[in-house]
Structure formats: C-alpha cells, structure tokens
Length: 284
Length: 305
Image (tube, rainbow over all chains, first blue to last red; front, side, top):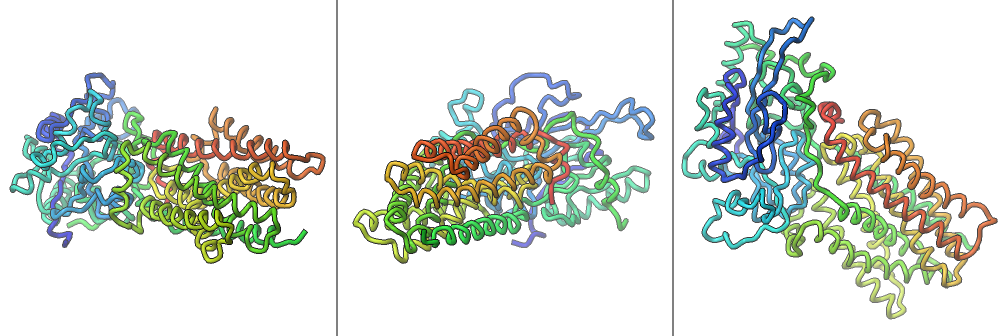
C-alpha cells in the first residue's frame, strides 16, 4: 500500500477549544465504557491520559503566571490520539499478528486475534496502547460489544476472558462505509481534520506558514520527521515544546535496540560456552 | 513554504516541563507469571547448554549431569507454557502466537524458540531414558538454550521503557549469565545426593564465572544507566537487589564455592539455593523497576537511542 493513499488525522491545536466533543463522540460510537468520575486537579483534564478504552484525550496545558518568562499567559488544548506511526512499535512487537496495517494504512488491532500478551504496551513510544481488562470486570463489562462491533453477528459469542489491547481504530468501521471518524465528525472547530495524509500535510504546512506570518511559533509534530518512528499518520500542529503536551520530543522505535541486544546475548552465551567447554573438558 | 517547520531548538531543550507530571508511557501489564517465566526460561536455556557441555567426553558424574539436564530441560519446557498461559488467561491464546513468525518481534521468535527447544529436549530426554547419548541433538539443544536464555533480555530491551531500552548492552547478557548460573546451581543440587563431587566442582566453577560476570554487569549498569537506572537501583528495590542478588545470590555462593573449608552436599544445597534466589530477585527487579520507569515522564521524554 502506498503511504500517499493512507488516511489519517491532522490535529491543529490552535483551533482546539477543549470542548471534549471528540472524547464523547469516540466513546459513544465505539461503545467504550466510562473512565469513572473523579477530579484530577489537572486543569479541566479529568481524563488524564489515553487508555485501552479512551481513544481521544483532550489535554489542557495551563501556562499562567510564568513569571520572568516571555511567554504570555495562555491555555493550550490538544486532542491526543493514537499516532498511527509509519514505523509502529506496537505493530512490530505484536507476536500474534493481531496488530496490522489495514487497507487505509492505519495501525489496527484485531481484537479476536489479540491474545493479551501485553508486549505492545511497552513497545509504544507514545504510551498509547493499553490493556483492556477482561470482561466481567464491571467497569469494562461492555467491552465485548464495543471493540468487536464490526464483527457483530457472527462473533458475539466470543468471550474475551484474558484482556486484550485497545487503542484508536481510526474508526475503521466508519471508514469502510465512507464515513469520517466520529471525533473528526464531532469536532466543532475543525481542530481535528480527517483525510488523505498527503493532502492533510499540504494543508498543515500552509496553516503553519500562515500562523508563522502572524507571529505564532507554530510547527508540525509528526511531519518530515528524521527519527526512527518516521512520520505520524495522525500528526499535530503545536505551539509549545512537545513535552508540554506529554509528547516525546524524539520518539525512538524500540526495535532499533535489537541489534545491540542480540549482540549482548550472543557475546554472553559464546563466552560462557567457551569457558564451560574448558572447565568440562579438563580431565581431573 | 518555510524550510524549517520543526524548530530543532524546541526539541533539543532539556525537558523541564511535563504534563502535570503525568506518565508518558503505560506501565507494562506483566506480573509474577512473566517474572517466573523469565526465571524458569533462563534456567531452561542454561540446562540446554549444560547438556552439550557435559556429554562431550564425560566421566560417570558428567553423564549423570547430562541425563539430569535433559530431564530438567523437558520438565521446564513443559512448565514454561503453563506459566505463560496463566498470564494470557486462556490456553488457546498461546496458539495465537503460532499463527505467524515475525523476525522483528523478539516475543514471536522466542515462542518459536521455545517450541523448537521443547521438541529437541523431548527427543533428547527420550534417548536419555533409553540410556543413549544425545549425539546430534546436543548441539541444537545448546544453541536453542542459549537463544532462550538471551532473548528474554532482548525482549525487554526492545521496548520504549527507558530503563530497559538503556539496558540493551547489559540486560540480555545479564539474563544469560543469571540463567546459566541458575542452571548450574539447580543441577548441582540434584547431583548433591549422587556422589559426583568432580562434576559438582565443575558446575560450581562455571557458576562462579557466570555469577561474577552477572555481578560485574549489574554493577556497571548501575552507573551506566544514570537517571534511567533509578527505579532499579534506588530505594527499597535497590536494597533488595543488592542484598539478595549481589550479596546472598552471588558473593555468598562465590565464597562457599571458592573457599576449600566449605565442603559437602549441604554446602552445595545452600550455595545453589542462594544462587537461584538471587536469579529470581534479579528478574523481579527488572520487571518491577521497568514498570516504575514507565511512570517517569522526564526519563521517557529522553528515550535512549
């Protein structure tokens, strides 16, 4: 599949008003359970983070009374989502082949193939994927009908008893019938734009240029990246350092550590096998 | 169109801000079953290597060791999937991993390594049962054993968890050394009743070398890992690691095995049990500290290259 034909999100944080319509629309369409009701104390953000059952998360970056800093007081909002990476750590790590790149070039978890091993969770450099607790846990009781909605009818009898990984599907089911994802549909300010990634990137670059001409320090996160993760099919327009939004400044693809790690193991096995041979060969 | 849409200065500043201190990464969901698997898998791999080492031109003690190591390999190969399945929830979920071979995924390769090892270990245990030597089975069993002892470390290193990623040079070797030391200890225990002092002595020497290497790597990683190593080396967990893995798990067995004043089956039993304890605590420290490492946004913002 040509990456130019893929779909994705362009999330323009300068347009976000923090209404959380994306969070609600995502939960409703995908029939995801509530996160419970508690106050985090983190500005208006009581969602805190993306999770196995929260696939859009609006963060509220408060920059008030920053003192000597030249930054004006401001309140930044960003709707976070799975990045659908060009080189996806979760997809590479998955031992069952449950995580695939689908016909829309999105990173998609097939819940009926996932065996809940949990290896994708530490393999995501953005901390997006998480395990959904087994059905039966009251908080996630609706899970079976939620993530499996596209399989409804023939697979409803399937019982998920050991937990599976969950994250944004980029509304795969909606895309197959020509709808845009629920979050983009619900966004009242077009902060979340859905479409062909190549076209979105062109739009985004134009937008950055316009903003910069108006004196806004805007830049794109996830476009023309040089790191091992590559470009993000769900990319962002930011006006602050990535870590202010809880995004890694330089995400690293976990599989890049493998050559050194395999060498370390091979060296240890080789050295100890040689020494062992010497010890056991010696006639005493 | 501007040339520089990504001001590099913005990315390369030392991270001073975080998002309300929220963790960037998700905590790995792994508990006692994965810790247990890493521990048993390491010993199993070590047993595979011992099979080949001891049967090359052994005396009667070495032959007993080869036979024991073959039986142990098979027993552990049977136990490991059980432990893994308890982690996955349902038995058939283990089979999902046998749908595909994925070279990029250490977990996929590891499962196939486990399957292959089980096959070879089974055949070799049957030949041993009928009093035959392993012959051509020994080398594959040793190679697969070495792979299994080491891939668990690769599996941890090939993640975004700052502590594990930083440990890509150390953790795989650590797993191998600890696995081989554990296999030596377990086999020495089994031989203690068998009146095979020569073979036990050889095992103890290999165990000493592996234990020394393990301690050296562990100590070096402590300074090499810097801020990434804090969850493993600081506080109560660091104290537990030093007490049980370095002192009781390595230094005490080393002294018991090296000093000629300590002799006999009781000494073998004690030093072996301590080595095994140290190996378990090491695996526990790696997994549990990895979870805490995921909680540290400052470390996660500077993902080790």
